[in-house]
Image (tube, rainbow, N blue to C red):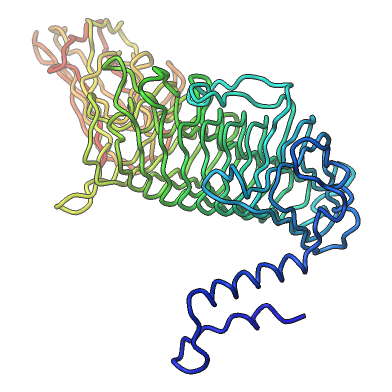
Length: 546
């Protein structure tokens, strides 16, 4: 039998035999024919591919009777499968036929699943860690659930096009401790989970379509080093669920109309190093009148770090009912750090806000870099929906270079008269806020907490009622001090003795370097009882980053 390259005689150098377009076409057809001759054909095992006959036994026999690293060919047709196909071979390559974007119609290889559990199972739970059957490849296939044991998707788009269902308890492909799985021009639809991987590492998905599933791609427990090129997801409740693994790269993927009011399209939790490059994120249509909470959620229950979203395109429809966004936020950070949003285009202005912080974690850090040619009503790019760190660092590209936005600037003041008993130190109740760029001031506890390490300038001014002649007053700054009495000041800012009946004032300023999460409060001592006067211009605290 001739080598494949024998037929690739292209006259690129200007010498040799000239080939007409028809001859070239004939040569490529000959190569395709030779490829099929070298592969093992499922029809040899009695598969009909008519959508009526149960072809489960034929496909399982095809898999069982071919050695490792074989090429299996499944011609175009509809193959009815009623129970799980077990793959316990290394390097098996399964090829079908596809035509068109969605691989439907004539000339398509369609695997139609009517069973429960996985349609394809690679390995099983009996295998020890990272010792499964590796490098299984799927090419040019449609894998679809067609059974009747169905549940309804929450996704409104899938419902509107009458595709809003999935097979209860089903999985398209389940890989147990194998890895090296390749999906190339593969469509998976209507499963509870389209692809499920456990210790399924170094996988490669190319031009893969994941549509109308409860969960699209689920990776867990060290399913690391995942690469996707031109992934397409559509109408899933959740398109990606990345958990307890390290390393995932999504290049030029398209995530279209996934999610619901209770489902987030992309979940990244207990994960390190996920990167999305040049991806398209498209929200629901405004006609559905449904708001997805966020496109991406980071660290729902455990810390997630090193997530980068570069050159993202946000195709977010106009608001419905004039005020309601089809998606509230692009990214929601619950527990996460080293999160980078590097340039966003499209229509981010139609979101409620670009980024939000939820929960109470002290680890919530995002860096935003962009031209930022859009804005929101509150002139910010983030919203704090919880009580956590909620640190957003913003670098805006402009004609003046890089501008650093969202730097610390706080002004708080005393809202009502405060009595200082004789001979005691009292914390000044700064409970009103004029400015707080990073929401760092805690008015209920009258203290400011730094969200990031750096140098800061602290300035205080305190006014009092007329004081007794000779009264001594003092002003102090306390650092990281939870005690309300009996503790020592970090620094004394002022110390005065009043001469004659007069109004009194204390003031002071200092610069200091602080670690992230350090906090300060201001305290006053008076030898005799005195009242501090309220007002934004006479008793105030300012903090600025320098």
